[in-house]
Amino acid sequence: MSTVDQPVPAPVIARSTDPLGVEVPSTVPTHWYNLNADLPEPVPPHLHPGTHQPLTPPDLAPLFPMALIEQEVSTERYVEIPQTVREIYAMWRPSPLVRAHRLERVLGTRARIYYKYEGVSPVGSHKPNTAVAQAYYNAVEGITKLTTETGAGQWGASLSMACSLLGLTCEVWQVRASYDAKPYRRFQMETYGSVCHPSPSDLTEAGRAILAEMPDTTGSLGMAISEAVEAAVKDPEAHYSLGSVLNHVMLHQTVIGQEVLVQLAEAGERQADVVFGCAGGGSNLAGLTFPLIGQNLREGTTTRSVACEPAACPSLTQGEYRYDHGDVAGLTPLLKMHTLGKDFVPPSIHAGGLRYHGMSPMVSHAVNLGLMEAVAVEQDDAFAGGVLFARAEGIIPAPESTHAVATAIDYARTAQEGEVILIGLSGNGVLDLPAYSAYV
Ligand SMILES: *Cc1c(COP(=O)(O)O)cnc(C)c1O
Image (tube, rainbow, N blue to C red):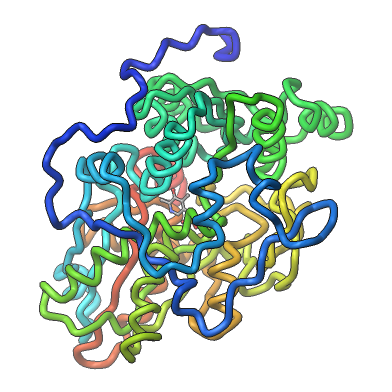
C-alpha cells in the first residue's frame, strides 16, 4: 500500500510550547553561540533570486517564522535557548565527550584523542538540535505544518520527531533513490506521524516539470527542496524547514561546541589542538567548531578546525566560491558558498548526508578567511577508518562521520607528543549497516 494514501494518525501530544516545568540540568547550555559576532569580516548576505538584492525579512516570511529570520542575520554573540527547547535537549544532552583510550592504544599514537558523540539523540545524529528549535519557533508563530526534503532520511526523521514532540504535522519529500532503497528511516518518519513522498513527485509543479523531462530520475536533494518549498509557499498554515546550510541552523548546532568547551576544561585540557568534523551542508562541523573558533578569535587559543568532505562531492576543496541557488528549480535565495553548481547530481555514495552540491555560507566564509581548513576523503578510506574505530571503541560511526574519523586517525599516527585531537562523531551507523556490510 502506498504511504501517500494512508491516513496520518494525529499527533499524540497537543501543541504546547509552554515549558513543562521540569528541571533542566545546568550542564545543558543556556545559549547558542553566534560566530557572526566575532568574525573579522561579515558573512556575505543572501540575495533575492529574482532581484539579486540582499534579502529582506518579508522575502523569507512565507517560508520561515520571524524568530528564525532574525537569527539568520543576527550578530549577537549569544542567543538564549528557549526553556521548552532546553527541556527537550535535556532528554539526551549534554552529549558525551569521550577519551578514546583504546583507539589511542591501537594506533600507538602520542596524541590524546577525544570524540564528541551526537549519536545519543533519539534518532542517532546531531540533526534534532536544530529540528527541535525550528519546530518550536514555528509552533509559537501559529504554524501547524512543516514541509521539508530529506536524502537518506536522517533530517526527515529528526524533523518528524521534533514535530511530534511539539504538536505539528510534517510532510517530507524524500529523494527517490533513498525512498526505494532505504525504507527504515521512512518507517521512523511514519511512526512519528509524518507523511513521506518520493521525490520527484506529481504533487508539485516542480516535481511534474522534472518528471516530464526525466521520467526515470532517481531524484536529488536539490529537486526535493524545490518540491518542499513550493508546498510550503502554497499553504498559508505551513512553513518550510531546512536541516543544514542556513545561518540559523549553524547557530542551533553550536550547542555541541558550547558543551565541548566545558567538557574539555573538566578533562583538564587547555584546548583541542585540532578538530575534525565531516561536512555535507556544514552544520555538525559548524556546531562543533564555531565556539572553538570564537575562542581563538577572542582569547588567542590556537585550535585548528578541519572540514572532511567526500571526494565524490567535494564542494569546499573543488567547488567555486560564488553565489548559487540551494535547489534545482532556482526557487531558493542565492547563497554565497562553495558550490559544485545547483545542477550537479552527486554520485550515489553511502554517506547520503554528505551529497549536497553546496555548503553553508558561514562555513564557506570561514574557509575563505583561513579560519578553517578542508580535505576530501575517498569512500573506501572513510569506511576503513570507521571499521577501525568500531573495533576499538565499540560505536559504529555513521557513514558521514567516518570521513572525520578516518582523517583524525591518519593525523594521529604522526601527531606530536601530547597533542589533543577532537573528532566530531555526528551520528551512529546502526541504520546504515548494509553500507558497512558492503565494505567489509
Ligand atoms: C546529515 C548528516 C551529516 C551531514 O550534515 P551536516 O549539515 O554537514 O552536518 C553528517 N553526519 C550525520 C550523522 C548526518 O546525519
